[in-house]
Length: 120
Image (cartoon, rainbow, N blue to C red; front, side):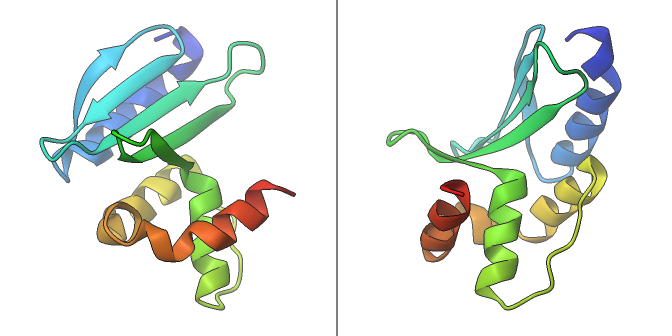
């Protein structure tokens, strides 16, 4: 991982390890964390605007279905009538840890809100 993303990647790795994810691929701008249950979390750094990044959560590898974590959180908040909050990387990862089942097992109930937000 390039220098601008090294600290962020270390944070992602340490947080995801607490819920059973391990680093399986790491290159300059991309790192994949896999779980033995075929779940994946992807850290993708922007090549040109550093240190911009996106955390992707792959919920169905066979269908290639994945969500940008920050946008999924907004869809979750909208669906539950919660006030929208700003999240730093640490907060996003804590949210993922707390709501792991919602995103990996119950993602279908948030797809409509996600698609609406993604089209804006």
